[in-house]
Structure formats: structure tokens, C-alpha cells
Image (cartoon, rainbow, N blue to C red; front, side):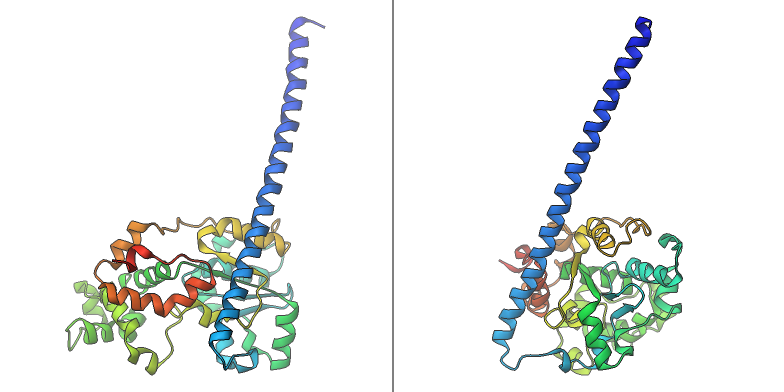
Length: 320
């Protein structure tokens, strides 16, 4: 064999060894990451249990699943074929998780999630909901199915809801909520109708939105709209023991881990998510117009969500 041939053979062998070492390193890193994700899930579920115990001690009456009316179970999507229950929370990746549940309804090969229009999963397709079943069936499904939800920093979620529903010229939300906010908190006795308001760029401010949330009359007239209703009021984590709790802030890793748990990681690819901005300046910019006292009241309104799901108290907004 020529010297050149020997060199090619030598580097080929070396390359193979290097490739094996690299694959071994990647496997160990993957195992380490998997262990961290398992541990994180345990910590999230343990925190919910501890906070719920504290809440039960403070609330002597207590609650049970039987106390929940059928209407309070309408955010739970059921997939009987795969044994899945998903409690969706608006403004927490719910469009993409609905795409997953929609794809599962279509059968294999599952459609590419990105190709599924948001209008399909929000308006056109009728999902099977938990409150479609009898109480006996509900209990059985909650006992045996894999139950999951995704949560998000409560104040960031409020900003996202405001931007989506009041800055993007949504006719339904302007007519049903925006005009009242302008009337009650923006010194506009007769706010313009939708088309004129959109043409002139008239909309409630973020502080008007906060005033609306803090107004006792808001809750007395009707429960909060789901886009800003507290997450625990939508998914009842103190009454339903979830198998998986995902966070918007770690969405891609959590989504991959959940799909693996559901044995779908080779069949469905969760879409890439936009960056979830939660830094200090982001919140300060949005909440700057709200007086300190109102920020503190708003925190009290959403405090249980902060505590249940491990989100830090935003001291930069609440302390002098």
C-alpha cells in the first residue's frame, strides 16, 4: 500500500473513532438533559401540590371536582384515541397545541402542523371537550388519560392579551370590551364605532385595560374573558392532578419532552416558537403608566397564578 493510501486509511479510522466519541458524548448530553427535564417536571408538580395544600388550609370550605360546573370544564380538549386531555389557556401556545390535537384527529400520516391554519383550530374544527361527557365518564378520563397544560408569566400573558385583542383592531373585542373601557376609564362618553375607531387609531390604553381588570364591577357582571382569566381558574390545578406542566418560557424543550411522553416525537414536529420576552425592561415599559398601588392590586389579583406555577414576584414593579 502506498504512503498516500496508508494516510487515507489512518485518517479514516481516526475519523470513525472521533465519530463514535462524538455520538457517545451527544448521547450522554441527551441523557443529562432528559434527567434535568424530568427533575423540572417533578419540581413543578410538587410546587403546585404544596401551594394547593396552603390554599386548602386558608379556604376552610374546600372544593372538589364535583363542585365544578360543566361550564368550567370547557377548556379541556379530549382525544379518546390517544388518551389525552389538554387544558388550553389562551395566549400560552394554545394555537400550536390545538394544531397537535387537530392533527391527531386526522390520522397518520399526520399533517404538518405549520400548514394548519389558526382559523381551522379556533373556529372551524369542533374538538371534543371534557364537558361533553357525563360526570362518570369525566372522572374515568381524568383518572386514566394523560393530562397536560402550559402556563406563562401572568403579567407577560396580560400584555400579550392586550396587544393581540386591542392593538390589532379586533372588532369583537373592541365592541364588547374596548368601547366600555374607553367610556369608563378614558373620559370618552360616546366612543366611536368599530370602523371609525380603527381608522382614527382610537383604542383603550394598557392602563385602561388594567383599570378594567381591577374594577370590582367587571367580575360582578361576568367572569373574566378567558384571554385574561386567571390560569388556575381555567384549568383547576388544585382539583385535577396534571401529568405534565409546561411553561411558555421553555416551550421548545417542554414540547419535545411531552411529545416523547405521548410517544409522538417521531410523528409530529412542534413548530418553532417566537422568543418569549420577559426581561425587566419589557414589563417596566408596559406597566410604567400604572400607579404603584394599581400594580400591587393587579399582582394580588393574579398572585395565585404566580405562586402555583413558580413565577417570581416582579419586585421591580411592586416595590418602591
